[in-house]
Length: 165
Ligand code: GDP
Ligand code: MG
Image (cartoon, rainbow, N blue to C red):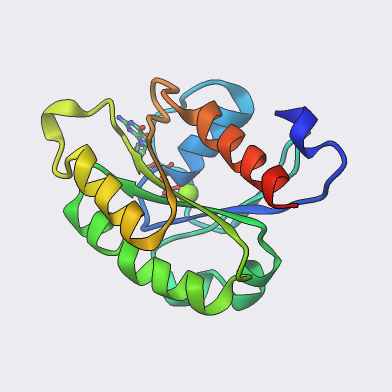
């Protein structure tokens, strides 16, 4: 992954409703571990060795992510929680906002997080895939808890950024 970003300064931001697991996913990617419990909802900026990643607070959807954040992002990870239908339904509003404010060539990944919570699943995988197809974005199901597809998500973003550069 470092290889893909070495010669390039890029910003990836994580967006999605509060509680979908944005901070947990970032911590799992950065530190390789799951720290249970909710993190502070304030906007945090996590600098990894690879590239700066901006984690956003999701509850004030249309205010917390300023337009400047979107403008500066080369990649966006849009998360929903597979156990929360409302977080899935709200991804359409997020995508509308992204298309309004982000760069035209921004790399967007739709991530169905908490895929470890199989008994509480509310959104099927094919529903996520269908939405991703509709918007022409890349899709993966992830788990910040088990680490499933977490590296893959960031790796895919990296590859796509290189491919488009
Ligand atoms: P954020 O508001 O989007 O940053 O969400 P957080 O990272 O604070 O996570 C919200 C809650 O969901 C916390 O209790 C996390 O421990 C939990 N959580 C996050 N990701 C996962 C996951 O992949 N699986 C499970 N089982 N719980 C998760
Ligand atoms: Mg958070």
